[in-house]
Image (tube, rainbow, N blue to C red; front, side, top):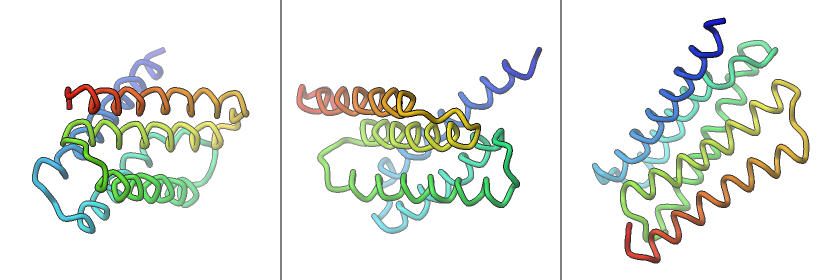
Length: 140
């Protein structure tokens, strides 16, 4: 009975920590390569928590977590060349993190369908469009 609530709290905290960490790499103006490494490692560590419900052994969970870390690190590289401010860039990375871990989690729990992939992709695209509109509107 308490497990679903506790899981919601832990997941929420993981996303909050991810946003804070991603944004801080911009706030402290960390160089591109060290920021990519830091974002990738932080993502991998947070992904282990988010992906551990899958019915696979821990080494496979770690492997999938490292894949999500690589995806978000590549997102950090890409966003470096876009004119986004600190928190909007952190939010954009959070969207990439959400998409990557969500799709991988669905795959691990055997719930992955093309409809679910479209839902995650649609939510991620809408969120990134909002970030782009905020930037274009001068809000970020």
